[in-house]
Length: 243
Image 1 (spheres, rainbow, N blue to C red):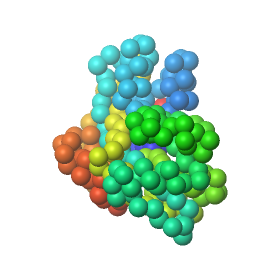
Image 2 (image 1 turned 180 degrees about the vertical axis):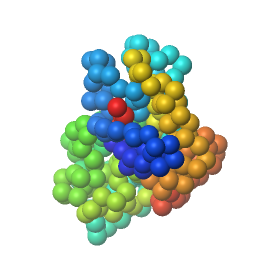
Image 3 (image 1 turned 135 degrees about the horizontal axis):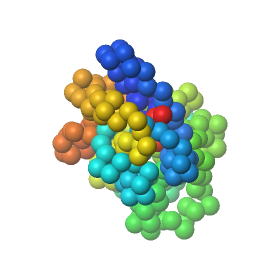
Image 4 (image 1 turned 90 degrees about the horizontal axis):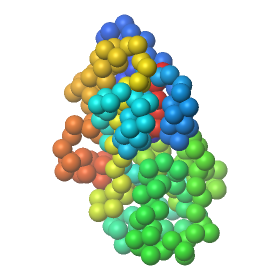
């Protein structure tokens, strides 16, 4: 649900400018992809870029309609008022993971990449019994707030503003996981030009500040600047889809 809040805000801004109403339904990325593959009609789908590519390849979205919108980095959260571990370097982050009684991450792309990172560190077997994977559509921060997870990892945009947790900070730049969320136009959409207008607006400079406010960066930002922003700025940190 990483893009739920930002898509809602941008859709409202688009309505103000164009008078056109955009109805957004946000669900977990796996559920979104399944529903599209099952034949449900949507004008535009917003998912991680690789998921959009698969839906295009399967004929569920229009060929050539992929449109990069935002890039989102992963942050670390603990229970509110709990001690904040040192995550300032890759070595410190590895030690924090090894020291945690439980580690939570999502079923989405950030969770997949974290599992690969743990494999690269050679600690997968050591922490296997302490891993808690949040069900699709359930924020990892919710598990942290309930005390079910001591150290939670998820897109910063999904952790921001959740009650009961404290965002320690982003992953160190050397191991930051950045997911590009992209849009694709439904293969049977009857409003293709309207959808393109919506996506052009969402990717325009006027939306950049709102995107950053939700913990992300516009997809048009240069990689070096993006890494710097995602690695240091907590105040400017999807799996959603739009009918």
